[in-house]
Every structure is written in C-alpha cells, then in structure tokens.
Image 1 (cartoon, rainbow, N blue to C red):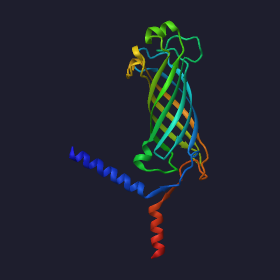
Image 2: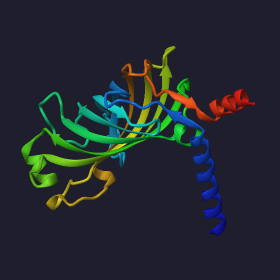
Image 3: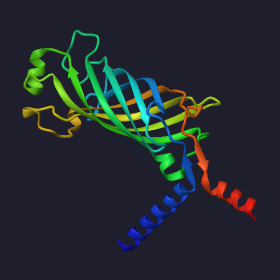
Image 4: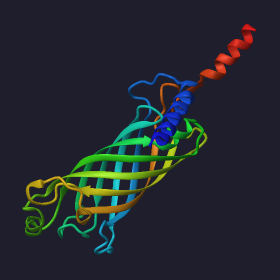
Length: 231
C-alpha cells in the first residue's frame, strides 16, 4: 500500500511539474465554445433483446474551461421502440442532459493545440420524457413518463483541419434510466438502461486569441531565453 501511495504521489508531482512549465492565455467567457451534431444507435444494456436497434440523434453545445475540464448540454432523441412503451410518435424518447468532460490525453500527456487524437470521458445527469402507450407506461413505472437519467461515456476524438477547428468523434456510452420503478427510487439497473455507439462532428468557434483552441506559452523555454539574454 505504501508503494502504491508513493508511486501515485510521484506521478502527481511529475504532472504538476510539467504543468508548471506552461501557461495558458486568459480566456473570455465566450471562448472555447463548440456546437455539434451526433447520430447513432442504442439497444438494451441487458441485450434482451438486442434487435431492433434504436436509432438516435442529438445536438451538443459545450464549453471547455481548460484543456482538461469542460461541460456540455446535450439534447438526445431516440426513434426506436426497443425497451420503450410502444408509441405512435416519430420520436419515442427525449433526453436533456448536462455532462462533464475530462480530457484524459491532456491530463496525462500534456496539452498540445496541434494534437490530432484525444481521449475523454463524458459523465452527466439528465431529465427524460418517454412517449408511449399509457397502459404500458403505467405497468412499467406506475404511469410515470418522465425520468431522471445518467450518462457514462468514453469519447475518441480526432481534431481536423489546419486550425483544428473541427472535431470528429466516436463515443460508446450507456444511458441510464435511474428512476424507473415504484416511487422513482434511484438505482442503476441494466434492465432499464441503453448501451449505444454514437458518432458526431463538433465545430469549435473562434476564440479571442485568434485560434479555435487554448493558446499555450512554454514558460520554461521563455525563462531559458531570458537567462541566455542576461548571460
């Protein structure tokens, strides 16, 4: 246990040392904002049954507060009946979620605005409305057609273009219905969850620093140049 704590502390110290060598240009409130669209398919997390798949589409509006941490607001629409009460509406399920994002690549390898590939996590909570037969809704959840939801996902992203303004991503994710059942008791149950694969495209708006990303300065390198000039 002591060895594990020692290794963890050394890793944290080395990461802190790396971060201390760089500085980010101060961003405005409207900087580092992106807008994206996505599409994909989901199925029951307990795979009973797997088919037919539920087609899904969504819109994301997000902001990165740093190269590591960010948030996004996601509206997701589902068009399938697998595990949902049968509905005659085109959209069977609507979920509005607030997700936090952690860029694992920048966290462990450091930030580089020219980086092409990034790996991130996306975890959040939301509010959903189901459309369907009132009898079936009553049978499965005491007539409750609105639910609290949660999302856990992993995002594989590629930054495209000379200015890295566009980002294409693939995201496997689990959408949890966490209040399905008597009394809306909160629980994570595979029977009432959907597992899916999504693909999307984000556009990162131009920031006040003239780029589409964070602007970074290598403080250590600048200090070396100053010391050389002094010498």
